[in-house]
Length: 252
Picture 1 (cartoon, one colour):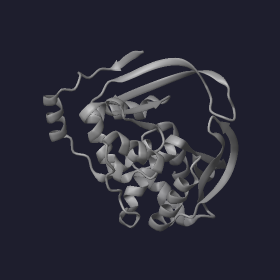
Picture 2: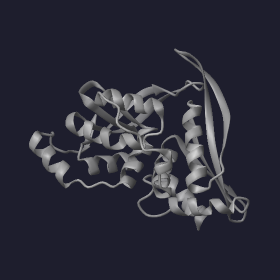
Picture 3: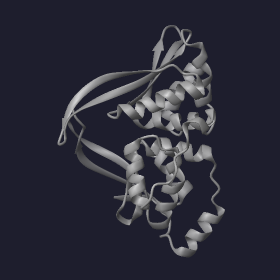
């Protein structure tokens, strides 16, 4: 494992300074909630918050904002069901532990939508904080959440003619309740009409599971969705350029 950006070990005094100077808004925590519901893990041991990803850009941002070392490693692994193909995984990783891990978890918890992730976060903390009521979410908060959730377990498909004519944003999960909650919020807060479909079934050690996909379209047939995709393309909303570029192509 290679350390690409190194920060000193946390201490009580360094954490005190960090917590006093660090000012994050609800929009910031919504952004990290989207990553938490998809690619950030909460581990009770050592109060660890672990962000692993093959893309450097979001993990490096995590590293710099929360002042934790950025690490890089390569290892052999196997793709999830149903594909089961061996490949060499290149992985960037940032980890928060101890008081900083608990601080992150406590602040991001109100904006988590995936019940499984909420359970892991509550186990790390030793208690269950209050979740933000669906009726209290603002359109901007949900936009920031969706931006990173779509970057984590989703993506964007462009449909091309002479120009980019339409776009489809997708979010995948084996938890249909999670996708249903996202669908409900997107309709209530952003006016987005989306659909959920079954895309695959696969076997795990706990038995057969189903993978679902939520998708929302933009284009001439969905003019009311245009504002959402324009919002995603604003500076500071998305964190992964290779996906943001697709949204920008559509908006432009």
